[in-house]
Amino acid sequence: MKRVLTALVLIPVVLFLVFLGPRWQWVFTLVTALVACLAAWEFLTLARQTAAKPPRVVVLAAIVALFAANYQWPDQLAAIGGSLCLLLLVYCTFTSPVARVLPDATSSIFALVYTGFTLVALPALHEQANGPSLVVFLLCVVWAGDIAALYAGRLLGRHKLAPSISPGKTWEGSIASVMGSLAVAGALVALSRHLLTNWNSVVLSYQDEIWWYWLILAAIVNVAAQVGDLAESALKRSAGVKDSGTLLPGHGGVLDRIDALLLAAPMLWYAQIIHQHF
Image 1 (spheres, helix red, strand yellow):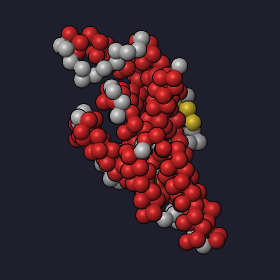
Image 2 (tube, rainbow, N blue to C red):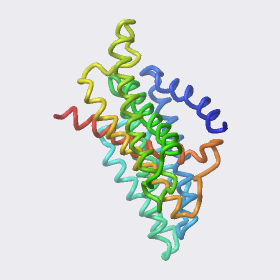
Image 3 (cartoon, rainbow, N blue to C red):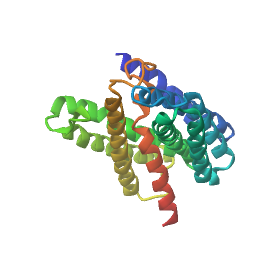
Image 4 (cartoon, rainbow, N blue to C red):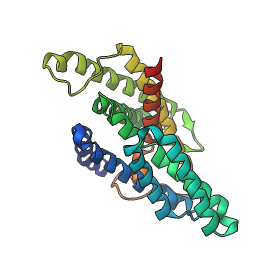
């Protein structure tokens, strides 16, 4: 019940932010940066369960700088991200004890990449001509896959997917997850091309590509989301904890809730970039 109630509160808020007009792009970017910082704080707390003690405030400042710089100079994201990684390395070199420089620097840089560089893809998607539609596509595909995996895994799950990482996940749940993502992707395309078009509405726009392009994209995003979920589970197991935090009742921490998006969002963004060039 806590899980459902939390979702009922968060989903309308997220959709409201997604459909803010272009003038409010900075609000979407700011909220995404805040989510990235919360997830980074939880990851750095996990890292502190091991031999590392990364400088959490400095890493959060680097993430904020990454989002701010990307908002102003989106074409320079690679250079900006690389520069921030080097700055974190220099900071840890001169502030951490010598025996801890390696774990501190690597965990700090990884936090910047894992929660910052990945989530920068959300504002990048949102800025496109059909940006809100792309973000809705991403969220619905990930959410539908997650829900399908949860219930199908409980009802039908027999064969473990990755027992050493996440004992509860099964191949049956994984396949159901892909099917759920394909179903919701097909529903979104049909909704935008038939029902909303008849109403002269452009709230959702998936008109530019043939329909099966979006199904292929949904499958790719779903696989990335499942890998992202497993990767976060492996990180938590490595740190010896069950949840990354307790901020979201029924869901654990912020990192627990967005782990799938951390790989799915950049995957969708990169797929769009590749498609635009070919």
